[in-house]
Length: 301
Image (cartoon, rainbow, N blue to C red; front, side):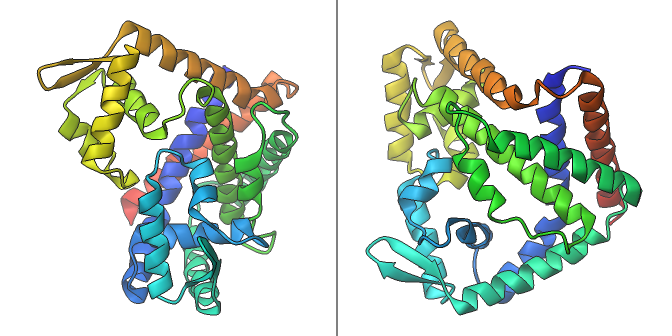
């Protein structure tokens, strides 16, 4: 079994997990009167302790998101008394914010604990295997570095939670290391995160109109003017072309984006090359079985 099947398996299993707890998050968003994006941001803030959180350090992992958007989310949490401004641009979670987190996460953990997508012994086996993978990532050299996964590890709920919560944590850490790998792969090529996001969109879709791209990437919070600026930048670089209203990726743009993807894979997979092919195949098979089991669970809910 190819090692390249590892991340697609992780990604699909993680998406299935998200489908389980998104309805829980939605209930608590309604209860506490905040948006889902603000709640997800609140969940991430403890990863920066003991330091405060800022727009600048949030943008390290997601340079695709407009700084103004993060500022608006932090303002929403401030108005809800879940974070407080400590110094200019620096925020800390409040006692009320911690209580909201505890209540929300308890409900999420209970929901995940109800999933019987794998027999318990297989859940334990998978959690152990994933822990080996994440520990290997934490010792990765630079590049790609370990900023994202180190911050993700700080959110580890410990061992006194349902096994599915442990699995979800380790899957999240592996996704964080994939972000480390991808950031290292493309930031030496392009400095504009929104432009890179648009290039990736066109690499996947081949062509699209600007309005479609804006709508597909609207969760990043970039304005139409910022999107237009990024499009013009990509056109000047020769990475995309414009024919009337249609934007298309060029062969050069495709080569640039594919090179970054290949480098991402190299960085991401490097820590696992000392693990035997048999062990990795068994791990990937367990992740795929987990995904199928959660999908069946979601279909029955």
